[in-house]
Amino acid sequence: MLRVPSEGFRKPSSSFQRPRLLKLKEMFNSKFGSTPKFYVRAPGRVNIIGEHIDYCGYSVLPMAVEQDMLIAVEPVKTHTLQLANTNPLYPDFSTSANNICIDKTKPLWHNYFLCGFKGIQEHFGLSKLTGMNCLVDGNIPPGSGLSSSSALVCCAGLVTLTVLGMSLSKVELAEICAKSERYIGTEGGGMDQSISFLAEEGTAKLIEFSPLRATDVKLPSGAVFVIANSCVEMNKAATSHFNIRVMECRLAAKVLAKHKGLQWDKVLRLEEVQTQLGISLEEMLLVTEDALHAEPYSREEICRCLGISLEELCTQILSPNTQDELTFKLYQRAKHVYSEAARVLQFKQVCEEAPDNAVQLLGELMNQSHRSCRDMYECSCPELDQLVDICRNLISSLIRCFALENIN
Ligand code: ADP
Ligand code: MG
Image (cartoon, rainbow, N blue to C red):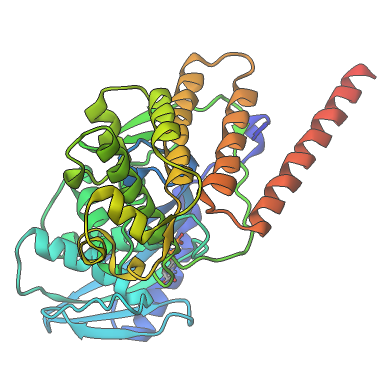
């Protein structure tokens, strides 16, 4: 993280969207032979700290980015949903609005739209929906951790709500879209959809769950966040990596709960174990040391720990795309989650207290977060680790240069 004069950076403004809107309108016209009736946008996000802990029930600290999903819409009377995309990589799609099928085995782009569409349809218990023509224009790098998928799901949810002429609060919309993105097969938490709806300009947000709420977190003035792309893509729905982590956390929660004599079969998230024990995150880290071992757990060992059969493990606990996994790392995942949840709270506290060395303190928490993601959660990759090293070395050199200049 850098501290630079804030006037050196352009703030997002609505006027820079105008040429994009005009281009979208033109493309819509050549595609559907008509004019869009309205436009909807939903932003992507960067998570500053709180990696992979939302689905464990813990608070996270993201902010929206300028890159977004923009959809031009025209409601039609035919009950047909026609989707097109400004990016030729994403082919046209058409379906009956009354018969939405989302194929979990093929996470094609239109399925993300259908998640948002179906989520709203189900929320209002509607069986017949009006059709619409939609042209999607997204500029969030896909599969790069800026949540292009959720921006698309949220945008589609908002489009559907608008076409229906209904209204919902932003929190309700976020909750519906978080639930409906799971139709694609990923067992995500609610961070991405929440920040897409609840973000505000000029502030990061602490997103808390059960009940969902967002609180402003004012970042130190002049601090600049550089978002760099390692250019390694990860399609969360097309692989099982994401869901394996979710299941490892679920299994760790159950084994910890059983170890502490709680009713483990009802427990799904690591946060529930902490809440039921009524202890601090630091104490939870000690419980983790005591109850779990670092060697990966085989399926048989987990079954023995919980006193269940292999069939019960596969059908009642694991998701469809993790049932064939043979081993699970429970200790490392729980260690990451409880320590990362504590770092989020420390990050917020530093922002509130705003000491002189706030930027250094926040930077150190972000470094710890990356180390934990790399070593404990194994959700990084060599290219990203290298990018982090390059950035950190660059910043160290810059600091040395400034220090020398000041001496001279
Ligand atoms: P992330 O959410 O981190 O960007 P995901 O793997 O969850 O990554 O989602 C990426 C998927 O979202 C893409 O494979 C594509 O199906 C969809 N997507 C992203 N951007 C667009 C876009 N501009 N238009 C249509 N679909 C998109
Ligand atoms: Mg995603």
